[in-house]
Image 1 (cartoon, rainbow over the protein chains, first blue to last red):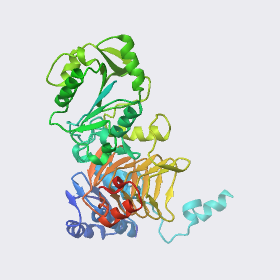
Image 2: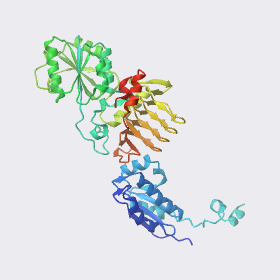
Image 3: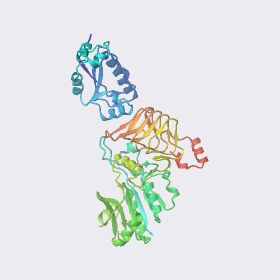
Image 4: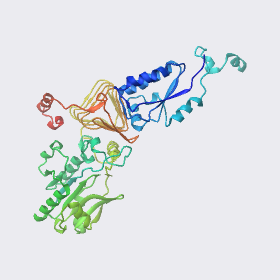
Amino acid sequence: MLTSGPVVVMQVPEELNVGAVNRFMLDVKPLLETNRPRMVLDCSQIRTIDSAGVETLLQCLEEALKRDGDLKLASLSPQSEVILELMRVARVFETFETCDLAVRSFSALPVDPTPQDAPWYTTVFGELDTLKQAS
Amino acid sequence: MPKAIVIVEEEKLVVQPADLSAPLSQNAIRHSALPSVEILGQSVVRRTIDTLVRCGLESITVFSGSLADADGFTELPQVVLFSPRDLWEGAMKTLAEHKESGTDAVLILGLGAYVEFDPNDAFQFHREKGSSAVRGFDDQGPLNFWIVDPAQVPDGSDLISVLQRITATNYPVQGYINRLEGPADLRRLVVDSFNADCRLRPHGFEVRPGVWMGEGAQIEKDARLVAPVFIGRAVTIAQQALITRCSNVERNSHVDYGTVVEDSSVLVNTYVGIGLELSHSIVDGNNLLNLHHGVLVQIADAAVMRPNKSLSRTIRHLWTGFGLDERASAN
């Protein structure tokens, strides 16, 4: 079934470090364990982030992608952005200046209606009948 | 015989995050003014004093609150180092002593900027003009460098207020000038040096075109250095690391496995952890200043960045045992 729920915006706590990541994961995991989760993490409150925090963000992204969903980051402070760049993960995430922009980005492109088990050429050339007509 | 007084100005302003025009805070640069920060193997202070020594000045009195013997001034007999509570007051007393001894010209340098000039040419200019004082300037305005006749300098409590009162003839400085007003200027000085836009040269051996290394630097297998770069004394670059695009890794620092250092300065005694990507930044211990974003970040995670551990006593003995410079191990 190709359905997707609403975009969930979640506030990331001020401290996303080794002492706080377990609690954060407990909160966020149920939201990611849905069909095609679409989530925006509001990072505006982050004051401290360490390597454990970055790893947690990666885990969240992995969970979302595993279920054909996506996770985007919004309102990152320059400091957090520097940390993500330093740890080579900045380019892995889609980032937005505001939560609003991040939420709207989910609707900018419609959710791909192609089932995951469809043949590869349907995404490249369209339906086989169309291709035959064109040739 | 001309003499010189050098005042290494202390930074008093505190940097605000995202404010690149302000000087680095004490946190960022560990209580040092920018001219005292070691770049490409030597500080701007040391390089300036070496220039003055080469020009044959009879005595050079240095006033600084942050310089240590590690800067190697003890090996220069002409140089006397003072650390008074008020640098400019101390400088005034020294100028009064020069006046009593009948010195006809004293060069006074307030070191904040890196200025390339020929002191002998400046002294000649002072003699020809016959004025009580000349002051260096460039197209951006006056510089903190004067040549004065001590006999014609009025009395006062501190030298800077006295110098501001006297009328000086302008001496146009033609050489390279970097005012070192903020951390971005420090990076610019490094890049300008690599591009040969100034006379400042890396202090080390050019092991291949554009790659300079200090004594005892260790580049592990599969680490890659892309010119121009500088690797300082006793630095370790671990396997798979990449140092590129005008980067400098200063004395006793360690760049760990797989880390990329691009267009960045790693200052003395700094550890940079595994698998990182450091770009457009200045790092000092656990302080990371990103010039691209204009932010100062303090890294709490010691596995990521930290002040590098001091060399052990055993290693120090090994260094001196091999006849190498003992200062290389004094951290």
